[in-house]
Length: 76
Image 1 (cartoon, rainbow, N blue to C red):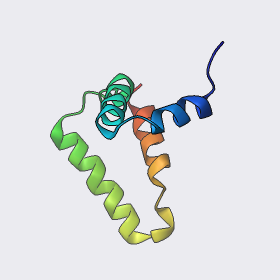
Image 2: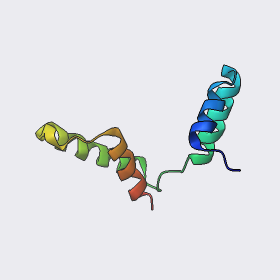
Image 3: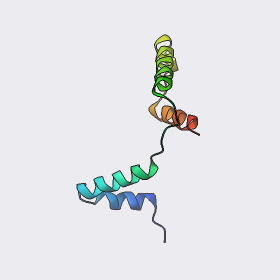
Image 4: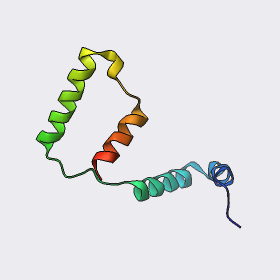
């Protein structure tokens, strides 16, 4: 029988903090994906361009989740 996400979460919350930390660390390690191969200069140029856009029009800002989705889409 497969556990639901709520069941897993509930069980994980009952772990002692060191064990919970180890679990979180392990899960994040498995989810981590390296960024696409951009040079530091390319990444800095992308960040500078985006900052200039946001400075010129605050309506262009995006949520953290949208930013992460954009970064992942660029790494494919």
